[in-house]
Length: 216
Ligand code: GAR
Image (cartoon, rainbow, N blue to C red; front, side, top):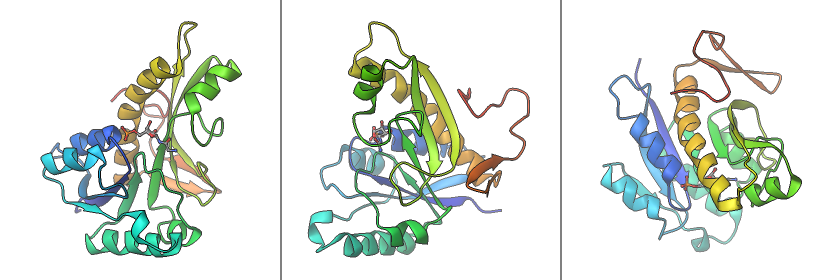
């Protein structure tokens, strides 16, 4: 079977993108990165992708009259590059319903909290303000309501008394870099089925493999 052709959408530094690129380098990886696309022309991730030999594209949201036109251009760029599956990796634009439906069950996102807690922005400051003892990160299928959709993998990160938003973000980011490649592999291996808006993972009960705090 051929490798799953993945497009990654970014807006910024692209550290999760880099983790996905690195994990797809191994010859037995079930996915390959066909395109990295940014809505921000100056995104640092574009250079990192180019250095890794991955084709890049900029679709600048300011060049379009509205979100529908922008999303249509995103869709054309992805399809034109042969993309079959989309990973959002720090992509900071809201997507239209149309786009989300076109990629339904073929698009995943990473979010820096244990969803459904703390959707949206400033997750770490909000977790600290709420006094929760654990936060973390989530990889989930994308639905049109922001930061919702069937959850594939989560990692929990304990909050320490001395944490501030930056120290917490740094520890959560390490967990993000572990779980995003892992979630993509599960999907690309065809092990993820959505039943009643829950993602069911075939063989996930195997020893040594868990869907929380997975060890790569
Ligand atoms: C990551 O922490 C990602 O979880 C977050 O943006 C950061 C991007 O960093 N995404 C969101 O907040 C989406 N709601 P990166 O560009 O280095 O991967």
